[in-house]
Image (cartoon, rainbow, N blue to C red):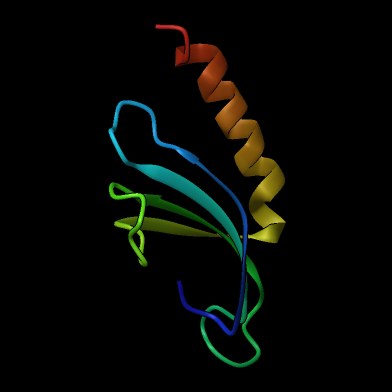
Length: 80
């Protein structure tokens, strides 16, 4: 997933797939020396894949806003 020091925080099953997983990781220097750490959200359709099929890097400064947006989305559309 890039970066020098990657720490997987949590991995869990991707709903509506047979072997898909979502992984949440902390990445140090994801874009090279001196770059700021990020949270990486990876989606893999195959559980044993070394690289996710999709990933998003979220700066720590944006986490609270992202969490709020996810909660709002769940409240508005999660029970349909």
